[in-house]
Length: 421
Ligand code: HAM
Image (cartoon, rainbow, N blue to C red):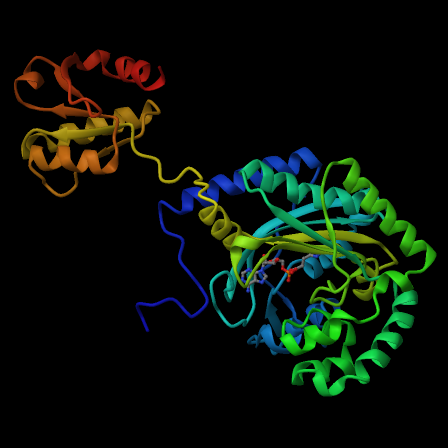
């Protein structure tokens, strides 16, 4: 147990970390392009925030939260998602006083007590954006495009945007009644979980993955026929904006999402190569959430994408992000006596902005050269011997094995020139 990480968690090792850093840098650059600024939120919040925000009857709140009582007797929860936290921060820091909408993004770990499998973890990372303070349908389209353009930049194609509108509380009431009537007539066909959902959260029956439930929901009444005029107009505009931007989408009347705060637009971006966990990204509009959290009526829209799933997709698509960077130079000591000189040279090189490594295991020269090769160094500088007396070093080009004698005084300028040409 002491040598394995808890189930559903994973380490990101050197070599992989550089890929994460590369992706995060791309995300930050991309968000700036779209006018979103970073927000850093706590990893835990008052449990009530998620109960109220995400919804008491959702799987996340009912079964998946890491909730604990702290030493002061408060109930706290490791964040399972960050939309509720962003809204809390928006209210706590009066971000409604700043230019609206507040356009925010976050990158970081989330925690859900889910059944781990490929693409599903108990600690996973999300990149998410939230635009709070505008009801304009172009913002719905903007966040969808932000995600799509990022995937395109990474080289990922063949994505599907699944789109639906689940209306506002007004039109949802009518739809909900009709749906309950329809589902109740076929109760015998529904799985146990859906029988419970029928009572507490009937819309969630629509995205049950059980075959029997799917057979029932295939012919269920569609929300589109129940949207009020305002919600219908909003949805038409979102679709129109996506079309103008050349983004293809599929209407999916069974898409309802697993969090209770959504209103109007909901969407998921899927990639078929991912197997069971096809959702790379999910989001939608949440016009009631700010009020639910104690603020004034304020619309909002956003999404979050799972970064582990994104890496799985990139992997499967054969897309490599830049990994571990090799040192520019390896400094080899000819003998043990040259070790301190090698260290001094190493320090010079690093201070001159040249990434450099040396041997720390008293290896022979042959073994040092082998090690330099394994590290992928472009050059090896060999210090010691007769060259040391002449104030020179041997500079070995690791690509072709050629070696030449260089004056110590010229070393940095020679290396700088060769490394940058
Ligand atoms: P979500 O659909 O629960 O939405 O999660 C968004 C994405 O996070 C999923 O599409 C998936 O890629 C990733 N994800 C979720 N659970 C796991 C898991 N156990 N392991 C690995 N990846 C996972 C939300 O979290 C909303 N807060 C999104 C949002 C933002 N809606 C509006 N604004």
